[in-house]
Length: 335
Ligand code: ADE
Ligand code: ZN
Image (cartoon, rainbow, N blue to C red; front, top):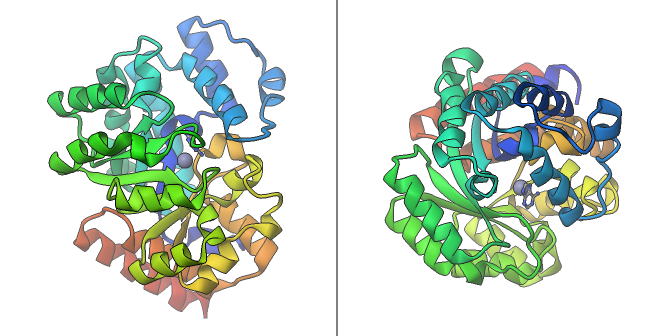
């Protein structure tokens, strides 16, 4: 997209805050916390960012989290994301974090939550971005582990709006987490899950039918099942698609072959998101730019995608109306 279009007002609905940890900040936090890294220079670390699949990325993503020790580390990471998101036109962000990944390293839940929340607390005033925090559970861990951590988050009064399901998908179907999602629903939380990123379309069906999720993160493999596509269109289930992530993790061979154009054409409720922008070549603006370069869609498709993101968010009705009005103004300015 052109520079003008970078300020398209959007909601980012699929973002792992730990995936915004840039190599420069990893080195800075390692120095601050006295942590010896396996790849201690920018050159050595940056050379690790070639992935052959989701797992090869997850290995580096979890390893790099070792530098997150104090509340200030989590706050600095979150503030850095908000600044970049603001530049990309993000006006509302629903941000996932991986509590189990921090607990496994001996970092207390309160350290991670309080650090992230401290940055989110000033987000509207500082960056003009309204936010919501989603606790994502690792599907390659047990359901009991997830339940224990959810209970801990609830009893500490963590200001989460919902739960998600992430990490290694294949072999860890949504059906493994029925009790977790029942508990979260009973606690009044919103429900999302990664499905159909590397896993089959049946995982998308399970996430909807067994977990009762309100949004599917990724969902790109849904296009392999025509009956599922018809259902997703009929029910207008939001799918938070992450184009650059899918290319970098080889879920698709090239951006040109990405199913997003077919999904839009079919009338699916898709939005564009950056997933783990520090790892996949860019933030939301870069995702839109890459799509524009590849598909030359112009303003009307950008408007559809941004409108979908705002309507599919868990923002208040008044915030959604405000952002949709901004989108109208943006459209009018496109001529
Ligand atoms: N955790 C962080 N990014 C992820 C992704 N793209 N898929 C699954 N788990 C993740
Ligand atoms: Zn993700």
